[in-house]
Amino acid sequence: MGIKFKITVLMISILVISGCSSNSAQPVDEADHSAMNKEDMEEMDHSAMNHDKMRNEHMSHDEVISLNDSTGENELKIPPMLERDKGEGVEYTVRAQKGKTEIFDGIETNTSGYNGAFLGPVLRFSKGDTVKIRTINELDEETTFHWHGLEVPGDADGGPHDSLKPGEEKLIEFKVKQEASTLWFHPHPKGKTAEQVYNGLAGLIYIDDDHSKSLGLPNEYGKNDIPLIFQDRTFDEKRQLNYSAIKNDDGTVGDTLLINGTLNPKLTVKKEKVRLRLLNGSNARNYTFKLNTGDSFVQVATDGGFLNEPVTLKEMTLTPSERAEIVVDFSKIDSEKDLALINEDGSSLLSFEVSDQSGENSEVPGKMNDFSMTEEERNLPVTKEVELFGMMDQVTINGKKFDPERIDFTQEQGVTEVWEIYNKPDMMGGMIHPFHIHGAQFKILSRNGEEPPENERGWKDSISIQPDETVKIAIQFKNKGVYMFHCHILEHEDNGMMGQVKVE
Ligand code: C2O
Ligand code: CU
Ligand code: CU
View 1: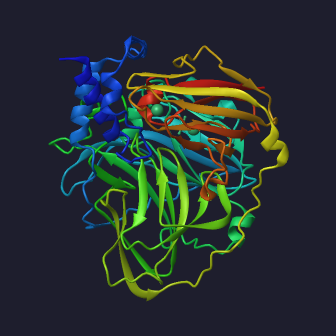
View 2: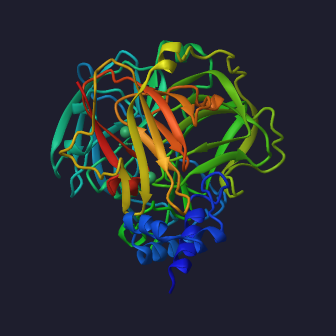
């Protein structure tokens, strides 16, 4: 089999894997690789890709790439709010544990969860709270408790250095200083993050503040303020999550969507504005959300806070670990039709059933925040450069794989620096890498020199970076410690597409 064939297969696989969308991969045309010269070959070898392995994995990957339509037969599960422990101060207990969950009628699937069999409760904090959390590992393997998007000291961040052995526990404490937002938590043990998240370890964190309460946005939890954790999975014939059997080094995707762990979900709403807090909690899949009617909605928040103004959209993309809050006005949409949230390819993700009841008459305020980018921030020189490269298990940052003993960058606490992140394409085009930094919320200064789109002009902790794209961000760490930065395709993270910044 000639190299040309393999490359063609690879190209196709990459296009499929990156969602087939025209902007997610740059096709190389046939003439280009037939004219491939020796240097090109070397570049391929240099990236040390195992062609056969990639071909096989991508070929099998292709078969499960599209999501089955949700039939909408099951009412969406709403995760419980975590109750405080009795006693002084704000104290919570979070246990990572194994369990069994009836995802399919009458069948038990082995899963993991926090304080339950599958996924986790919502941890709800108010700005200003001092939070103490007792974290307990009841799994039969090491894990960590990472608070994604939370600005906490390094020793509370739950990165791979913070591993708890089975049966161990750790008390962490931090003060909530950041603004109202929807964050999340998940494990982060070295090399095992993807599998543990896949099996169900993930939960949401809500931060409230006085400002968010005064905005008048829908805020009845589970009624018109709805958490939506999107995760795609593959179940085997016994309806089990057999991670090691279906794992893909370039990001494990599945054909079955679960929202909050619900198969074929449906959400019943009143004729009113409903706030949806979306988390892409998938290992690797990107989603572009739309309403099947073509109606628009407004985005009100990014990863780390409210946008200054609501942004009207007909579709919105979230790459793994990104969040967005949107408001859909069900009093304005024709509910005679079948309503659903669909993916870019038209597959139905979440059906909506609109009841006859009219609900609250809430308004989305025109001004929600005072997020700004100062001239000074715009003019800061780039002081950190990050180059993302590779695929499969050959992924690197600045040419290196993660080494827990190596500090890649240092940054001073409370000082804003500009990081420039570049997604270096390979000769087949490359793929989107969702890039995330721990312990801070940052501002996107530019994408390829241009201002970011309106719905990215807010606090972010994760950003999608297209092949050959350069993104500049301004970031300041409020606390000290060692923090990870990495690709949030969890298999890329586990394969070493991760570095560390030490804040002192
Ligand atoms: Cu969602 Cu290293 O994090
Ligand atoms: Cu994180
Ligand atoms: Cu990646």
